[in-house]
Amino acid sequence: MPGRTHSDRPPALDYQKPKRPLTAIVIGAGARGNVYSSYAQKFPEELQIVGVAEPIPYRNERMAQAYGIKDEHRFVTWEHVFEVPKFADAVIVTTPDELHYGPAMAALDQGYQMILEKVIAQTWRECNDILKLARKRDAIVAVCHVMRYSPYFRQLKHVLDSGIIGEVVSVQHLEPVEHLHMAHSFVRGNWRNTEESNPMILSKSCHDTDILRWLIGKPCKRVSSFGSLRLFREEMAPEGATKRCTGGCAVERECPFSAIKEYAERKRRLSHLRLEENSDAAIRQALETGPYGRCVFHCDNDVVDHQVMNMEFEDGITAAFSMEALTTYAGRRTRFMGTMGDIVGDEWNMQVTEFGTGKRHDWNVQQHAQALLSSGHGGGDHALVRDFVQAVTRSDPSLLTSTIEASMESHLMGFMAEESRLQGGAVKTIDLKL
Ligand SMILES: NC(=O)c1ccc[n+]([C@@H]2O[C@H](COP(=O)([O-])OP(=O)(O)OC[C@H]3O[C@@H](n4cnc5c(N)ncnc54)[C@H](O)[C@@H]3O)[C@@H](O)[C@H]2O)c1
Image (cartoon, rainbow, N blue to C red; front, side, top):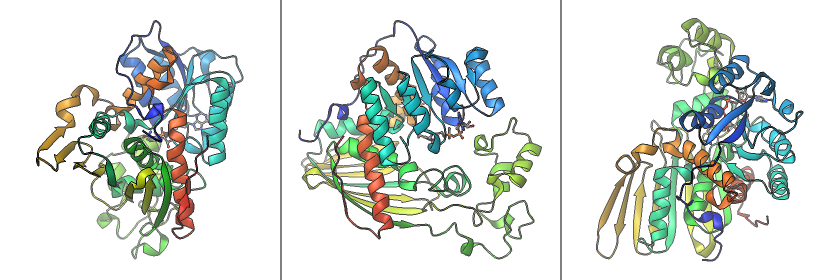
């Protein structure tokens, strides 16, 4: 089929037990670093964590304790890892977005294989630098587009490739971020500011451009995009709102975004508050002094809270995507329209209906993939690590679907969509030359 690459194929499922465990160094032992490394606790015969770079002492200590990491292989920041000779097979780069390029380039330079969190890097030039060096060093780089590994999206890919709905003609895809997730990550938190991390269409939605490109299986030719920040702005603050929820705010009790309700009372999403222990006093102090106690209308955020993107793929296939922060629900909703039928899915359930017979096939992720659902992203987080271990130990990158090569196009779609949005929706042509 024109435009297809080897990486469009679902990964081979002929699992082979490695002869020895792959050894890896975690760079950035925060939320994601702990998710991927926990694979080593479940499957120590496949993966061993032998080094860590992490500036927050309790996180560094926690990882060293959990995996028995030697003192000489514990580092404060990523640079220190590469000041000593190579001592593991791979690195897992799970530092904040603005700290991907440095460790990725240094790791490739020393000959490490790599799991690299998305986004690959903050600019298209930097993404290309990493790709070029990976090729030069013949390294296997898995980009953490974890949705490609989740049972639901694998099944969706399998259904589309089976041809049951004929040729795909059009797609409608919605990512409802959920308003409190938005407030946490993209208003108060790490991904709130374009300069410091990335535009929303990359930091949140590179998963979406990536999954659409993968499922459609053909190159994207043109994009355009609109969107803006509507709600989380100074002018939208209700009367009586103070700079912090703990600062005597007159409307805190009725505000849906109250930090006191979210963190001190419901105790949700505490890991990014970076507390050694989640005691009431420590949470209160973090809200009084740290970023997560700020009023959502008085932050230094600039990323959009709603954005739409239109895409045209090869053969005139169209896709319409909406990233929506202002929802009470999460979970991506996707509809595929084909020449012989359609698919309606919501990350849990999928209905496939054939035009000819009117026959409807129902699929539910819980019935079919229970065993894989224990890790995050519907099981995708650990499935990515498993396939990375397989790819490296068998020297076969085709066992991974989200190699850096396969991930570049969806990043370019994101960079171009943002350019389009900033230019009022101008149509941008995608001309990918890798
Ligand atoms: N694939 C996904 O679905 C997904 C989901 C969430 C986050 N992410 C990405 O994962 C990355 C990490 O996110 P997170 O939620 O784990 O953040 P986090 O803040 O929990 O973890 C990042 C860690 O990096 C450490 N760090 C900072 N500077 C460092 C340095 N110089 N050297 C070494 N370590 C350093 C921090 O102290 C922190 O512990 C980000 O790029 C984010 O965009 C991906």
